[in-house]
Each structure stands twice: as C-alpha cells, then as structure tokens.
Amino acid sequence: MRRSTTTLLGLSAVCTVLALTGCAGPAESTHSSAPAHRDGGTPSASVPLSSTQLNQRLLNESDLGEGYTRKPEAPRHNDDVTVIGCPALEKLGGDTATGSGLDFARKAKVAFTYTASSTSEVSEELYSDSPVKLSSGIGKVFDAMLSCPSYQVASGSTLVDMGTAKSTAPELGDEQWSQLLTFTAGGQRSVVKQTAIRTGNILVIVSGSPGLVDAHLGLAVNKTHASR
Image (cartoon, rainbow, N blue to C red; front, side, top):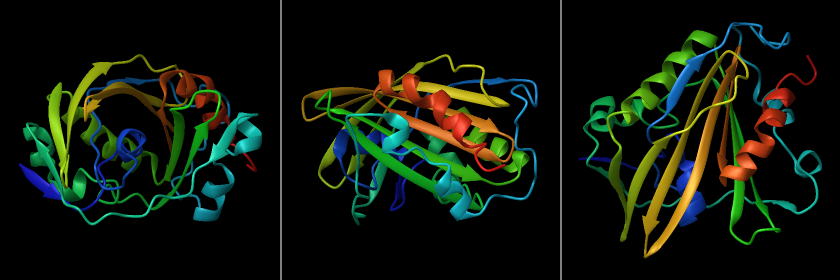
C-alpha cells in the first residue's frame, strides 16, 4: 500500500466522479503504435513546446460548441491518497506513478461540463517533451495498470472501488492508449473513458464521458498542430 499526496496520471477521471483533487488512478489500457508522420503533420522536434504554446492548443468553448462551460481549477486538497490492491503501482513509486513524477517538461490542462447532460464532463491534458520521454513515461504507467484489473483508492474518508476494461484507441498520431474506468463510490457508479495520443513531442490525454471523449478526441489532436 502506497500513500501519495500528489495526483496519479488520470486524476481528471477520478475528479469527474469525486470532484476533488488528489484521488486518482488510471487502469488497464491498450497500446498500439502507428507509423510516424501518418497524418502529415507530426510535430517531431525533440525540443518541448512552451507552456504558452500548449495553452494555445487546448480545446476551448468555441471548439466544442454550444452547451460547454469551462470548469474552474479545483482547489488542491491535502488528504493523503492510498492505493490498495495494485502492487504494480506501488513498485513504480510515488514519483513515477504521479503526473508530476512523470517529469515531462511542459503541461497544460482544461476541463468542461456539458449542460446537455447533467453529469457529463470532459477534460484535456497536454504534455510536451521529447517523443522518447513521452512514450516511455506514459507507457510505464499504463503498463503497470495491466496487472490491476481492480483495486481501490482511498482519500480521506472516501473509498473508491475501481474497475478497468480495454478500449480501442483510434489510429491517430504516432502512439495510442485507451481505457475505460469504472468508479463505484457512495453507492454511485460512473464510467469514464481516457484516451492518450502521442504525436511527436506532444501527448494529448482526453478523459470524461465516453461519448464526449469520442466526439472531441480528433479535434484535440488536430489542434496540437496549430500555429506550426
């Protein structure tokens, strides 16, 4: 059992369920590789983009269309997070299994609610670093989840039962990972989809209601080529 005060990769998925920062855990995934420069616009430079450049490439309300409202960043909670029943995550250690511990050079994130469905949300995280570092960093975490089809996450007095299922990622970019996460807490069950696409020196992670992730993933990936 390992305790961590930082967020695991995939925090946005758990925040969709718990609406708090500091309790998360991604799960089983599929991983495939696509030929480099498949889309003719692969950003291949090893030099990471600046934070300003990443923020310019995040989705906004105009991209998503009517009914989407940007969520303010949630305040950070101080409760320790305990992952129960996933030895692979414990072996990775807190530094590697956390978003900050992945140590990517640049990052940006945004989240939205969708008013057409009272509980629907979608979030996007962008990271930039060398292609090798992005692939290796996220690959280690996703591979660890393969050995954890189910486990629990505790934060303060909240206990979440987590389940996983493989999901097929679309053939975008150079590498793809995708998963379905099932959260059960307080008698309520939620399903969140999380798909990650690496395109050159940018990693895009879109999480949230499965239909919203499928609807906006391509747009999120395409927007990473903006201003090139």
